[in-house]
Length: 300
Image 1 (cartoon, rainbow, N blue to C red):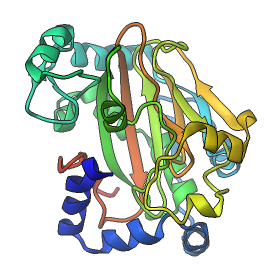
Image 2 (cartoon, rainbow, N blue to C red):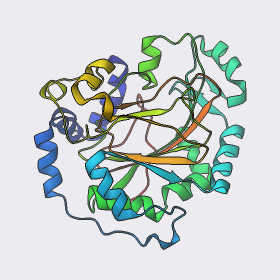
Image 3 (cartoon, rainbow, N blue to C red):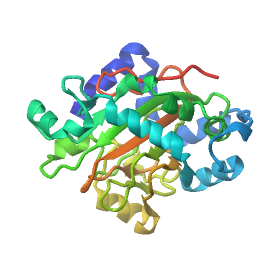
């Protein structure tokens, strides 16, 4: 939690209303009351979407499960994002201090003086037309409007590498949101779309989600300042049968309610490239990483 204090300070500085969400947004009765007050969103015309998913079915499954898999990026879009990421310098471990091409990961570790688990692009994603096209896709906006209500808006756009690392400390893993189940407090209501740009198998750093925990939460997981909890404790509380490990080839996508328990896992073979588009409902909030401004998109 101490490592995230700069993030929290930046949010409070930008708008003190963030503190109310951070303090109260972890309580299911508060969240559920606000969900009931949400006005239904107007769905976009999805005929021009690059995706073939059904919007009503996706929204319905999200409401019950908190996770929907099976979105698929077209191969040309996936290839364009991958080419951009391979040829554009990223930043090590959520900091702009060490900049490197992903092919030079080994040298970046030497310069950083510590394991480099991730390489983020921050606002450089704006220079990739394929990323912008995914973020603006009408199906994503229609699903967000159907699930979150008419205030749905993009609050984050992230592109990052996860690298195989054998000597990462617990602090390194926590910074990278890996290997510890947690829930996000990005907004009163939120939704995140993820896309693998490289194939992900069991050793490729798959995303793990505990289904139905977005609307089911024990009291001890609400009356707490921390969002991360021991993995076995979470599985014992909500059932190992609800654990879903998302595997898929290049272009495989899925959408989650990030208030449900989830985690990234350690990459053990080749580097993994991931794209995220996050939606929320509050203009007062901006997704930040230790003070780094979020890449946002104006309300449509």
